[in-house]
Image 1 (cartoon, rainbow, N blue to C red):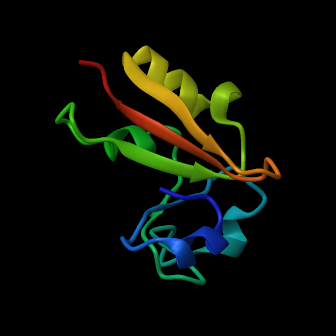
Image 2 (cartoon, rainbow, N blue to C red; image 1 turned 90 degrees about the vertical axis):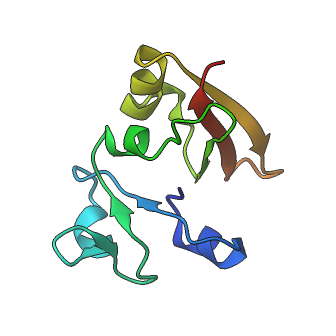
Length: 107
């Protein structure tokens, strides 16, 4: 899952694009009734709980979230903790603008 269009160019697999429906960017990024990101055609997730629905149920698999924001103080982070998920910052870009988070079920 990503929240920056630029990141999609560097990935081998098609990710989901995350944009909160209350964000000022939502109208600019969404099309097809909020199901698709406008510029890349990626599937769009926009609710606070939608990232949780993308996490694989098998404990050996993870949801990787490449983001331009620190998600510690967000609803996504709070929901992950409430659902007893591991959420770990795995990498931070040298300039601090991108972060790679791993989210998966504990076990």
